[in-house]
Length: 118
Image 1: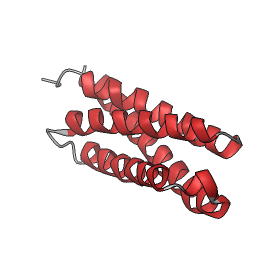
Image 2: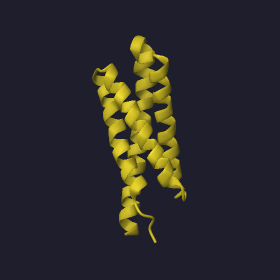
Image 3: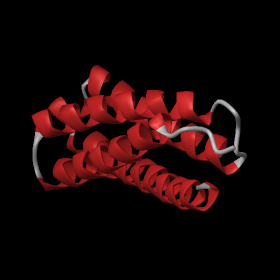
Image 4: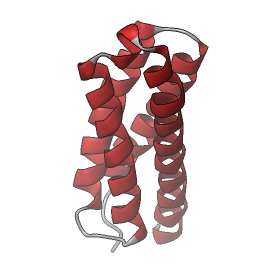
């Protein structure tokens, strides 16, 4: 079982890294350049939260922190909220960001529900 846990953890770290990079690129190179609804305070804060929690979640898993499952649960919640915000705004860039957020949320939710390896 530990081998499967490690493989899933590596996948989850990869999903977190991808979401972090996608959200960061989208926020700084698309949303802020577009302005309007893309740059509204609540959306920008949510994307910034998503960028930070994905980085934090990946870091906790890389260190095999005993509380990584709790951080992954929080990450899933923030990623879902970010995906919904991106989908409301719409467009190709935002769709790509929402997809990365949903993939990360799914992986983090699964990680947060895994039993501790003995």
